[in-house]
Amino acid sequence: MMYMKQRREHILDYIKAHNVTSVDVLAALFSISYCVNVLHLPSQLILNGVLLACLFECFTLPIFGTLSDRFGRRKVYIAGMIFQMALAYPFFLMLDSGVVWLIYLAIAAGLALGHGSVYGAQGAFFSELFPANIRYSGLSLVQQIGPILGGGISPLVATALLVQYHSHNLVAAYMMAIALLSAICALALRNESGE
Image 1 (cartoon, rainbow, N blue to C red):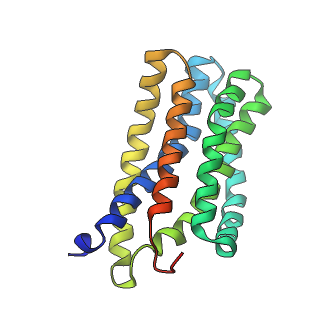
Image 2 (tube, helix red, strand yellow):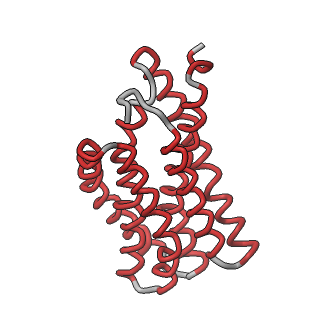
Image 3 (cartoon, rainbow, N blue to C red):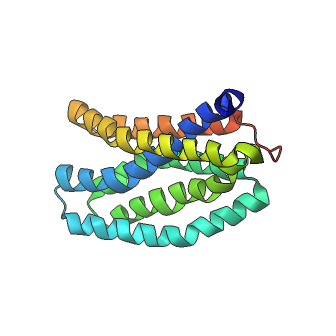
């Protein structure tokens, strides 16, 4: 019954949750594989970059959460997705440079700014999509199914594109398409706060 009444929100929210996880996984995990297997850089070097980016994200998450309280969840979320779209090609250019600080900057921008901006607004944004009487069930379904699909499929798609075409260009285009789709879904969603 709950699903039938909230079907539109579920579908759009699954897509959003899928896409947030997809971009996060590509920035964090695919960058490790890309740098080690394509650029032949030491794995520890890239793991250190991801660790630093995660540390920075610990500070940016509450900042973006506060910004979402002030300016609106949807605006911060969409701004984060637009940032991720803009970052996609420069992300790979920075990785391809082989310069350690540029690689770290790329990963930090992807996680601390790109993912942080979206994830900082996401908790409140997602919870406001469902009425209080079904909020827990709605969020549970969205948060379990969306990330499983996004986190599981995205690295496979990115790897297949890289292997097939021997270029990061289509992987960057895939990242941009994911972010664009998520921004469109965020625009289409209605929430309980009237935003």
